[in-house]
Image 1 (cartoon, rainbow, N blue to C red):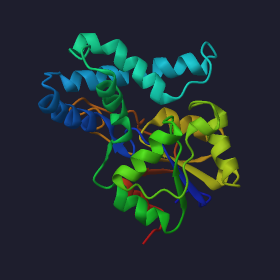
Image 2 (tube, helix red, strand yellow):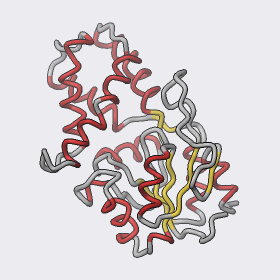
Image 3 (spheres, rainbow, N blue to C red):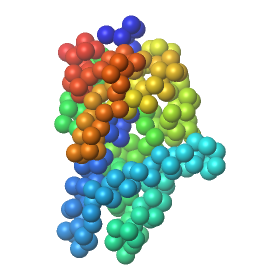
Image 4 (cartoon, rainbow, N blue to C red):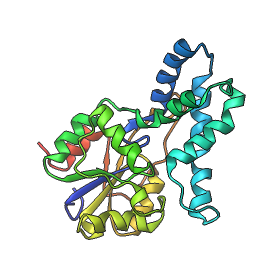
Length: 238
């Protein structure tokens, strides 16, 4: 257990709660059958996600005014479309494809683990996803959040301190009463620098068969868990 039991758990979403890559591949292959396209969906998923941090950096740096993730995702999709044979999609098709990020599938343990954690803690996403994206995703797959703490509320993207501190503040809590749960060590270290408690959850399949291990041998976090069910057990949830 961490030295101070949290009152709220806030969660990274992409990769931590949901399988963004597998979801895009599965839905994309279904769209191939509907639209008559023939796309290398694993490559597109990786390329699309590869543009994510550079797009956020344009906003974080101040080179670009605040822009929600739906817009950034659409710009990335439009830029990639010609290389993947999607340049002939009409506006309705592109909008539908872009909103795949609203329909991502949770990891097998996510809903059950969150339901256990919700019995003891206030839970909600702290994600760079915009408010509508996170709301639609939760509705689509049954994520049992108490609150939506989208970074859109702070008009800043993680790892800006105002996102972590803003989430704790909106909940009426001190940072030390708030725990970030994430599968990305850099996110946790940024939260820890703001005084939050931290829990690392292993998601080795985030990038499919590509190795993913960004956890040091001696991590500076309060809890390490194999999945959300394991986290619930380690935090004393029945």
